[in-house]
Length: 287
Ligand SMILES: NC(=O)C1=CN([C@@H]2O[C@H](COP(=O)(O)OP(=O)(O)OC[C@H]3O[C@@H](n4cnc5c(N)ncnc54)[C@H](OP(=O)(O)O)[C@@H]3O)[C@@H](O)[C@H]2O)C=CC1
Ligand SMILES: O=C(O)[C@@H]1CCC=N1
Image (cartoon, rainbow, N blue to C red; front, side):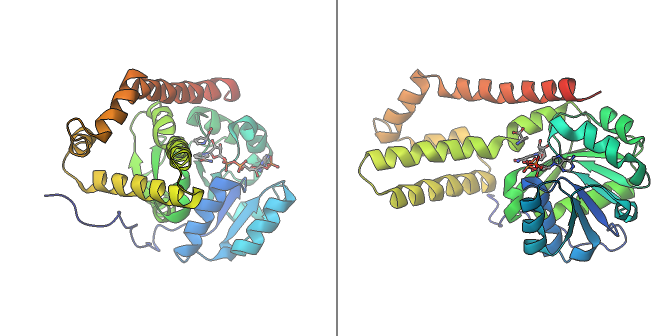
């Protein structure tokens, strides 16, 4: 039977495992998505502290969410029992060494691509480290995050992480840390591949005489509808594709062009390049 339900709904918050106070180091795109989710779930903004050197980003966070934001880590960080690392891999080490004396009692959650938990544990002097690889649909509660925990993280702490991530969408634990590089390549970077496809579909629509608005609407509804159909269906995408492809018809003409150009193979290579870059980031900017 096809699944006729809507997208997975996040679990209700559990006060027993919820963190008391959360600090975010880095207040950019990913931090905003997570903070938005937490507040929507009922987490009080007064219990969220952000460290963000960029003044305009601090002002935006304060205005949008009512959270406190500082330019530098200060004593207020000591009260956080969860610290979320949402800085770029390139600056993680420096930021960690700066905040280390203030965060020794906390559980740590990193969303940085590539940076391995062994590096993070060494920089912070703590083994209580979880890595997450979210994606930007987190902003609307429709993301998916890969999660990996170091051995020292216990099951209550894993639950706490799940609870913090729940408002952003689905979560998926991986047992091998290196699998997070594949998650990064597939779903972390994945929204960009979909937007790339949307750009091309819209450009084609405009080229065929539709207005930009018409082409955009048709492309977005098609990608959203097809993804939802694939999610609910028992059939693999290949079968769903065959159902669209009438013999000697229009889809066949299009797929033939894609196949001749090796587009599927190029997609695979592109995703492998992202995985390679994740590994490289870990080597280059880790310990
Ligand atoms: N964007 C995405 O789709 C995803 C991103 N990620 C990961 O999330 C992390 C953040 O990415 P994203 O939110 O996109 O990046 P952003 O650039 O939007 O946010 C990072 C923020 O950290 C700030 N920052 C720089 N140095 C420090 C410091 N020492 N202490 C505190 N804050 C600092 C930056 O300020 P300034 O601009 O002034 O340098 C910036 O505002 C990355 O590691 C990335 O790999 C993971 C999954 C998906
Ligand atoms: O492009 C990046 O490096 C980050 C990680 C996954 C998505 N954005």
